[in-house]
Length: 108
Image 1: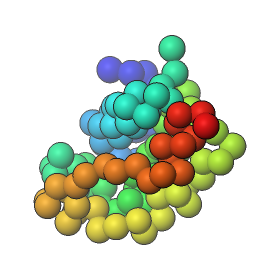
Image 2: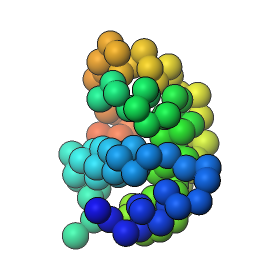
Image 3: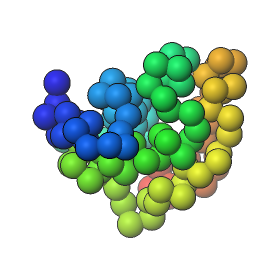
Image 4: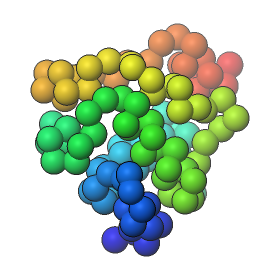
Protein backbone atom coordinates (compact mmCIF):
# COMPACT_ATOMS: atom_id res chain seq x y z
CA UNK A 1 0.00 0.00 0.00
CA UNK A 2 1.20 3.46 -0.88
CA UNK A 3 1.51 5.59 2.29
CA UNK A 4 0.77 8.76 0.30
CA UNK A 5 -2.61 7.34 -0.73
CA UNK A 6 -3.29 6.09 2.81
CA UNK A 7 -2.78 9.68 3.99
CA UNK A 8 -5.43 10.88 1.51
CA UNK A 9 -7.97 8.49 3.02
CA UNK A 10 -7.46 9.69 6.61
CA UNK A 11 -9.35 12.98 6.39
CA UNK A 12 -12.94 13.21 5.12
CA UNK A 13 -14.26 13.68 2.57
CA UNK A 14 -12.30 10.99 0.81
CA UNK A 15 -12.66 8.06 -1.52
CA UNK A 16 -11.69 4.47 -0.78
CA UNK A 17 -7.99 3.61 -1.01
CA UNK A 18 -8.70 1.27 -3.90
CA UNK A 19 -10.41 4.04 -5.87
CA UNK A 20 -7.34 6.27 -5.60
CA UNK A 21 -5.13 3.33 -6.56
CA UNK A 22 -7.36 2.51 -9.55
CA UNK A 23 -7.25 6.10 -10.83
CA UNK A 24 -3.50 6.33 -10.27
CA UNK A 25 -2.91 3.09 -12.18
CA UNK A 26 -5.25 4.16 -14.99
CA UNK A 27 -3.52 7.52 -15.43
CA UNK A 28 -0.08 5.91 -15.30
CA UNK A 29 -1.12 3.33 -17.91
CA UNK A 30 -2.52 6.05 -20.19
CA UNK A 31 0.60 8.19 -19.80
CA UNK A 32 2.74 5.21 -20.81
CA UNK A 33 0.55 4.49 -23.85
CA UNK A 34 0.83 8.13 -24.93
CA UNK A 35 4.59 8.20 -24.35
CA UNK A 36 4.25 10.71 -21.51
CA UNK A 37 5.09 8.53 -18.53
CA UNK A 38 7.71 9.57 -16.00
CA UNK A 39 11.09 7.30 -15.03
CA UNK A 40 -14.07 -1.49 -13.95
CA UNK A 41 -17.57 -0.92 -13.50
CA UNK A 42 -17.47 -1.63 -9.71
CA UNK A 43 -15.71 1.75 -9.42
CA UNK A 44 -19.06 3.51 -9.16
CA UNK A 45 -20.76 1.25 -6.63
CA UNK A 46 -17.90 0.15 -4.41
CA UNK A 47 -15.82 3.30 -4.33
CA UNK A 48 -18.44 6.07 -4.45
CA UNK A 49 -16.92 7.55 -7.60
CA UNK A 50 -20.02 8.69 -9.45
CA UNK A 51 -18.92 11.24 -12.02
CA UNK A 52 -15.91 12.37 -13.99
CA UNK A 53 -15.49 15.27 -11.56
CA UNK A 54 -14.77 12.67 -8.84
CA UNK A 55 -12.04 11.11 -10.99
CA UNK A 56 -10.54 14.56 -11.51
CA UNK A 57 -10.61 15.27 -7.79
CA UNK A 58 -8.79 12.01 -7.10
CA UNK A 59 -6.22 12.71 -9.83
CA UNK A 60 -5.43 16.13 -8.38
CA UNK A 61 -5.29 14.78 -4.82
CA UNK A 62 -2.83 12.14 -6.07
CA UNK A 63 -0.83 14.95 -7.71
CA UNK A 64 -0.90 16.81 -4.42
CA UNK A 65 0.76 13.95 -2.55
CA UNK A 66 3.28 13.22 -5.31
CA UNK A 67 1.85 9.98 -6.77
CA UNK A 68 1.17 11.66 -10.13
CA UNK A 69 2.45 14.78 -11.85
CA UNK A 70 0.84 17.46 -13.98
CA UNK A 71 1.74 20.03 -16.57
CA UNK A 72 0.85 23.71 -16.46
CA UNK A 73 -2.02 22.97 -18.88
CA UNK A 74 -3.68 20.42 -16.55
CA UNK A 75 -6.67 21.46 -14.46
CA UNK A 76 -9.42 19.79 -12.44
CA UNK A 77 -11.82 21.42 -14.92
CA UNK A 78 -10.46 19.00 -17.55
CA UNK A 79 -12.62 16.35 -15.84
CA UNK A 80 -15.80 18.39 -15.31
CA UNK A 81 -18.96 16.69 -16.62
CA UNK A 82 -17.18 14.90 -19.50
CA UNK A 83 -19.64 12.02 -19.80
CA UNK A 84 -21.87 9.74 -17.76
CA UNK A 85 -19.24 7.71 -15.90
CA UNK A 86 -21.61 4.95 -14.83
CA UNK A 87 -22.90 4.48 -18.37
CA UNK A 88 -19.40 4.53 -19.87
CA UNK A 89 -18.18 1.86 -17.46
CA UNK A 90 -21.30 -0.23 -18.05
CA UNK A 91 -21.12 0.01 -21.87
CA UNK A 92 -17.35 0.05 -22.25
CA UNK A 93 -15.42 2.80 -23.97
CA UNK A 94 -12.65 3.41 -26.45
CA UNK A 95 -9.75 5.81 -26.04
CA UNK A 96 -9.08 7.66 -29.29
CA UNK A 97 -6.57 10.35 -30.09
CA UNK A 98 -7.41 13.27 -32.30
CA UNK A 99 -4.95 14.67 -34.85
CA UNK A 100 -3.73 17.40 -32.50
CA UNK A 101 -2.74 14.84 -29.87
CA UNK A 102 -1.04 12.62 -32.44
CA UNK A 103 0.91 15.59 -33.80
CA UNK A 104 1.94 16.67 -30.31
CA UNK A 105 2.97 13.15 -29.39
CA UNK A 106 5.11 12.84 -32.49
CA UNK A 107 6.77 16.16 -31.76
CA UNK A 108 5.91 17.57 -35.18
